[in-house]
Amino acid sequence: MSLFGITTEMLRQGTQLAARRHELLSENVANTETPGYRARDLAFSQELSLAQQVRSLPAGGEVAPMLDARLVDQPDGPTSPDGPAVDVDRQMGRIAKNALYQHAVVQLLNARFRQLRAAINGQG
Amino acid sequence: MPQEDALSISASALAVQRTRINVIAENIANAQTSRTAAGGPYRRRVVNVGAETSFATIVGAQMEPRGVKVSSIAEVGGTRRSYLPGHPDADADGYLDLPDINPVSEMTDLMAATRAYEASVTAIQAAKAMANRALEIGR
Image (cartoon, rainbow over all chains, first blue to last red; front, side):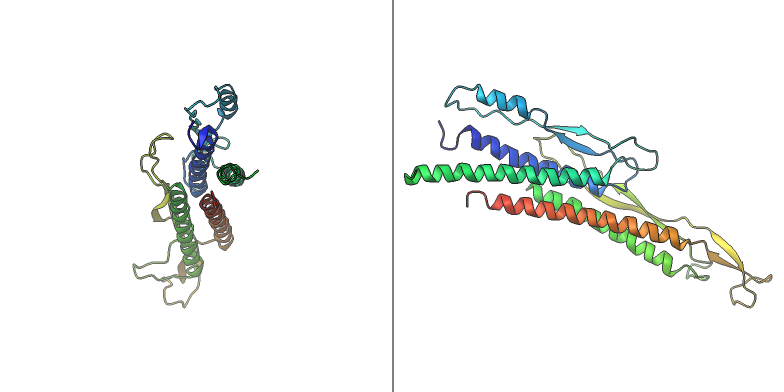
């Protein structure tokens, strides 16, 4: 088993996806005035099934599953011919939620590293 | 680094909104301009906004930063005739062509541009917070 293990790898992918998602959401906000623009987002629907998959992995399994996210069209309401289908309020809500998600993942990563440090120092 | 891409996307939006605000200010300032360098009265201008068209691929592969840009600034406004005999630019009948600018609609456009600017500022702040937290990993 590697030093960092599956959990760390999954959390790393989580921070990466949060950053990607923020990029997409910023783009949506940037294009609120662009005619014909369609808002896009990352779909995280796979997370729960992945969590179950991780739990069913044999102890010491080496391969971390890839967190899967898909780029999806997510227009906020119907596209009008002259206006974009971007709802700034919803996008800002998603940005806030995504930042919180990233915060949570980083906290978990930090906790993981603290555990490792404690183990290395022989504490606890 | 994804946060940098997010920052450049939001920065392009800030630039576009600033251009919009400048053009609106120009419209309001020239609401009574009856003579321009090109001749004739000033005409109302609008900023056309377009998405930056670089190729974005699916997640996992390299995702190009995309943003927004000013595609054109068009003169769209008409003129209105007002009766001002004795004005140096008035015609023989005493009528003067003035730009048809409605201050109320300019002000609402100004508010919309300001709010869009603020939304992108918030997105930038979120990107900065996320980057800072990522830098704290393992501290």
